[in-house]
Image (spheres, rainbow, N blue to C red):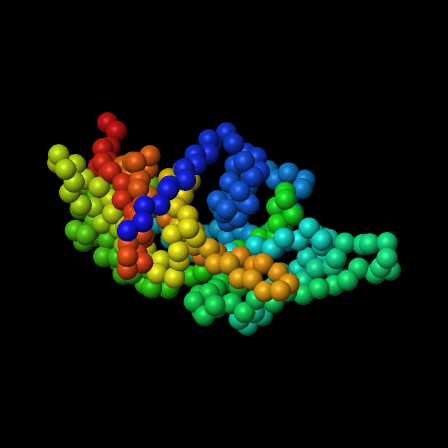
Length: 286
């Protein structure tokens, strides 16, 4: 069993700037769909900007809204030798295609256009929401492509749970009273398989588990961003011409009462990432 460090980050509501200090090295904690409203520096360049969701004609309470993306697949490429203005990123079938022209050099009359093609893993191809692909160039000339993934099993469990909202016995471990602004059904049915259990001295703790069988401990990163738990698994591929890195991301917003400052994680021998944190029941304000 391997204990893993937990990286913690808390952004104040007054922080409106988009930079590497805000989201860690290489923007690893940047979520383009939720952080899109932050003001970006000049050296940050969108290639495929997030599409804004259409407003629903009926007002929907925040607790009943299904968060769109809790999983994504990320590709990182060093594009220092290429002109950012010429970059194009598209998905065709199961292929991620990146095109760009090299920067102008005196010994070449024309910029050389090159293409990099990724054959997406089956687990990505089958669940990719290609229409909402996002890509951008960071301050240190790193191209990042984020492909959102739809977890249809989670969506089905969530819909079934929500349809039985009047019978919420499965949510009782979270407390007699629950914060109406938080979607407990979405959290409880997530791929993190959460449960609240009794701990010592009549206290409670929140336990979660995520399968990470194909990842080494050194390639797994656990982070807490405000009240969001983010799991990142890295794959590295090398050949004679390039070093490529791809990442799977899973994230979930933790329920009120989760003591994230005391959150711990470890990888079991059978490849499951176990996460736990002390949990206190929500107490409504009078």
